[in-house]
Length: 355
Image 1: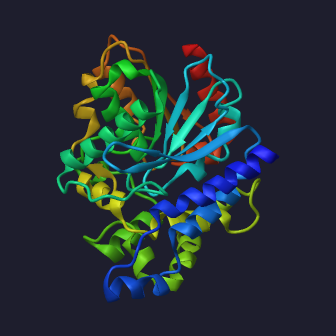
Image 2 (image 1 turned 45 degrees about the horizontal axis):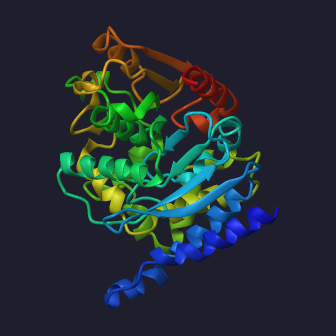
């Protein structure tokens, strides 16, 4: 356990680099009203990472533009196979992969990181237009890959991460051995007929009705000391999903602290969307731009609110390429946490097909 303790100690030390400093009387007053900080996020994430059985390395990766990407690498000693890189969805972070990291790193190195503007990564100001915001995300992923020295990878993205992984694959196809899209957000065009729109979950409708044009999760910050309770109220399912690892509110606390900070990535996401379920630049209009020899697998939860017909539409747009779509029974949008054993087995099979 010595390596684990030393890694966690390093994790605590390095996190201080990105602690946000109050500016002005309003900013200095808000932290007292809003019970969060980067240090609290660091602490709850450390409790999550302690569950890992495989060797791991957690550290900041510094980019040339001074931004830092918080990165967790599991099984770094497995150098013979193409590494798996996992990109989380909106409002998430590396900690939400805890049900998957050990299994998926049993025979190859696994890298996961907090997207720029989310989790413990830097939270810069993004361009306000949808194309500029998307490009900023994609450029940060490529610069991270270069800095990490990863020649090529199996690239997996969930929800917003799936959208960005696809955008990355359009621009850098030579780096992607297989693209795995897990309940990807932002693919279909918004239907003109309201009857064709899938009903979003209750928590999405509630947030939308409360906030109007505000950032999607502004309610967590405005709610102050009641913010952590809102996560537990609106998303009690997360506690159930991770019950095998945590009997307390560890995951709810993690989600709260990930999203109660400066809403940098959240603001970028808002610039990229029309409303919560739709992208201003839908990926179905661009999926054909991915090089033909890049294989794609799309994994959906059978009970998701995401439009699962997207998989078949991608097949139609890429008739001369490998495209596979499948649904996992008993899973909703967070497939990797709803049915982790099945999800892990599917992803392992895909990875084994690469090498």
